[in-house]
Image (cartoon, rainbow, N blue to C red; front, side, top):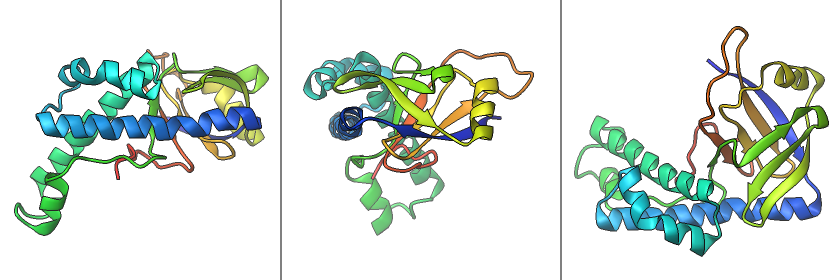
Length: 204
C-alpha cells in the first residue's frame, strides 16, 4: 500500500521550457520504438533494448535511464494490449475494435506519462526543491509547494521507490512509505503532463 501526496512545481520560465520539451521527446521516441517492435515482432524488454537503445539515446537526446524507461514503457504497453486482447476487453477476434487494436503499432501521446527513477529525479525536501533530468540537461532547484499537511506527510514518509511528477504549474504526487515499513530499493517514478493520468502509460 502507498500513501500519496499532491504537490505543485513552481519552475522558472527557463526551467519550464526544459520540462515542457522532455515529455514530447520521450513519447516520440516511444512511438518509434513501438513501430520498430511491431515490425520486428520483438516485445521483450531486454531483447528490444539491444536493437533500439543506441538510436533512442542519440536521436532524441535521452539520458541512459530515460532511454531504458522509454523502451520498457513500450514493452509494458504491448503486454497490456496482449492481455486485453486475450481477455476479450477489446472485443472478439476479428471484430472491428479487435483488429483496430491488434493490427497497428501502439502510439504514445506527446504528453503521456514517463517513468523516472532516483537517478533522474531527486528531492531536497527541506529546501522544497527537486532536481530533475530533462532533454536540456539536469534542471536543479525547481521549487515545489503543497498544503501544510501534504508537506508534513511528505517529510515523514518520503519513499525513494518512486514518484509521479507532472509538468510546470500542475500537480506532483509522491508515493510514501507507510509507518512501520522499512525503506525499499528504488524502482520507478512516473511523469504525466499536463495533468495527472493515474496509471496511464501514455499510449494513444
